[in-house]
Length: 118
Image (cartoon, rainbow, N blue to C red; front, side, top):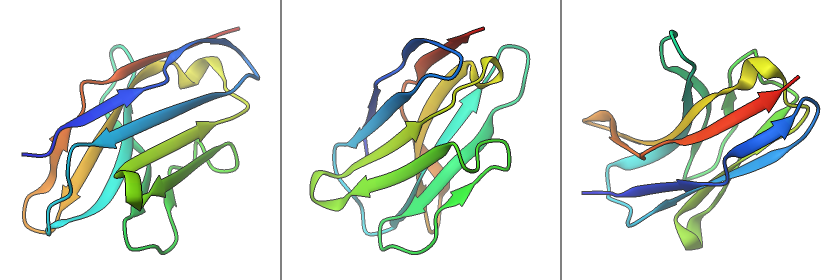
């Protein structure tokens, strides 16, 4: 079982930046991709960004393109989400998740709160 631990959330003013980290306890042979999701109160969970451990072009939701950057450190089994030019609508609980070839998004972190004040 892969354990994912997020950190880096907090309170920031609009226009500010935050960097989230997600450390995986291990990597399985089937885990090929990592993603960041978010869920705001009263809304469904949505994917924000995703990146393959093996490289390639990351995926970004339209709402964060040009403002958020996902990156990885394979040696540390860690994925990052750099969030710049934050907006109040970015306020949500952010979750890290691991995607497996057979099981889909099968492992989730506990979530970290990001609050952007106007």
